[in-house]
Structures are given as C-alpha cells and as structure tokens.
Length: 82
Image (tube, rainbow, N blue to C red):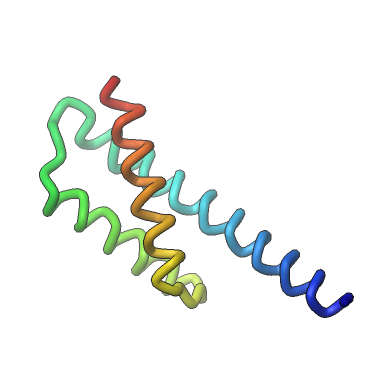
C-alpha cells in the first residue's frame, strides 16, 4: 500500500513539475507571438519544443504526458488571445 502511495506521490510531483515547465515555456512563446494567430504547424512546433526541453531535463514522457501538454498549450494560447 505504501509503495502505491509513493508511486502516486511521485507521479503527481512529476506532473506538477511538467506543468510548471510547460507554463514557463508557453509564456515565452505567447510573449513572442501574442499578436499573431498560431497555425497548426506553429502549435505543433511549440509542443515539440516543450517535449524536447522536458526530455533534456530528464523527464521520460508517455503519450498521455504529451496529450496533457497539448491540452495545456491549447488552453494557454486561447487564454492569451481572448
């Protein structure tokens, strides 16, 4: 039981770190492209950059992690445009 709780805690901590890094990188991108609409290719480039940065920092990302990053990118880009 304790092992399961530790695994959940580590996973949540990992997710918190990922979200923090994603938000920092996105803030930089949004500041650069604030007045321009993002094409799908530009959005995919942002996601790929974030994934690369996280992997350089030692994170091993699953497909679920990348999907979560995509959701964060979408929400942050929409938030800044409105």
